[in-house]
Length: 69
Image (cartoon, rainbow, N blue to C red; front, side, top):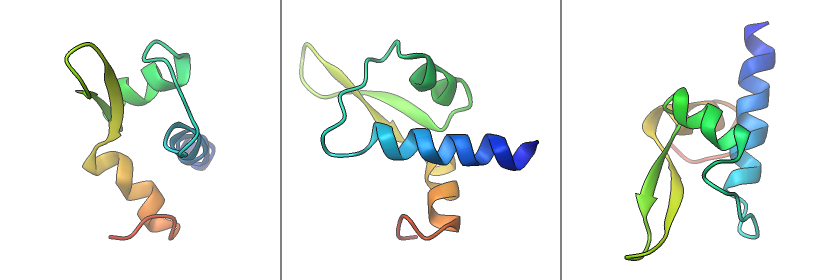
């Protein structure tokens, strides 16, 4: 069951960080990744925020070769 969770996390991370993606911070998948500390909220301007992969969030993408180490 663990591999299914990792696969889902990888898939959601790819969707969240694709150049054309606009994901609300309250989106259930974004919230789940934040709870697992795979992404964090960062301020992009004085009135808006976005998501950024954490070190832990980058690890699954690096393991499958989708992100440089």
